[in-house]
Length: 320
Image (cartoon, rainbow, N blue to C red; front, top):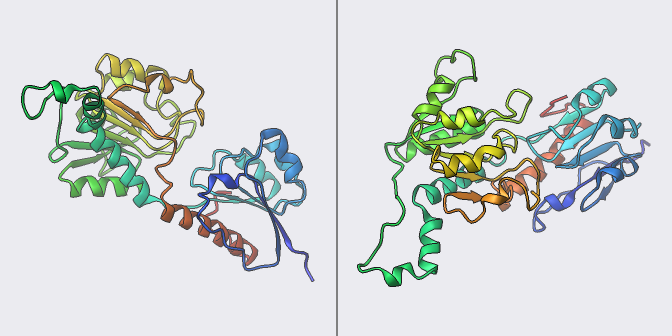
C-alpha cells in the first residue's frame, strides 16, 4: 500500500477562519501552519510531497531542501512567490487557482471607484468635523461629485478580471477601452497604451506582476493622464511606482487613487502609500478585494481539486 501523501500548508491564516478546507479524497497526512517565516520554510517542507502556499516564498534553496516535493499548490492566482524555474528543473508541478474571485474583485474595484468619484471620504470627514452644522443651506459642495455614465474606463489587462470589470463598466453606461501592450502597436480591439492613459476618466489595473509590468505606471505615465483620472490598483504592488503617487495626487496629475495592494504587505509605517493615509482622494485597503466569503471558499475548494487532479495523473491549472 502506498504511503499517505504528506501535505503541508505554510500560511493557513491567509484563509478566512469561517471557510471550511475540505480533506482531499485520498490517503494523506495534513499539517497546517498559521504562518511561516522565511527561515522556517526548509525545515517545514523537508518531508512534504505537496506544499500549499499563498504568500510564503518558495525559493530555489527551499525547493532543493524538499527532496520528496512533487506539487506546489498555490492558494492564489499570482504565483510570483514560487521559483517556477527551479520547480521545472526539479520536475515539480506548480498549480494555481483561477477565476474564483471575479465577482468579489469587480465589486471592490467599483466600490473604490464610486467612493472616489463621489468623494465619499471627503464628505464623511467634513460632516464628522461639523461642516454640515455650519452650512447655510441643506447641503454643501466642498468636493467634486461625478457620475460614471458617459465616462471612459481604461482597463489594463484583459483577462478574466479585466473583462469582468469592463462588462460592469458598460452596464453602468461607461465607455470601455482595453490597453494594448506598452510600446507596441495595439492588437485588434485594443487601444494604444499611451492613448488610453490620455483619454480615460478611470484607469483600472488587472495585469500580473512580471519583469515587463513592474513599474508599468511611473511618473511619465502618471503625467500623461490628461483627463486626471481615478487610478485603481487591485492587481499587484509594484505595477505602479508608489514613490511618485503622492506627487501625482498633490500636483493634480490624477484625481484620486484606490489601492488594495502594496509592494510590501503589510506596508511599514514609512511606506509611500502609508504616507497618503488621511487624504480624501486616496483609499488603501489591505489586499481584501478577493476576500469575500464566497470567493475564499471557492479558492480553497479549487486548491484541493488541484491536489486531487494531480494525484489522479491529470494536473490542472499548471503554471509549471
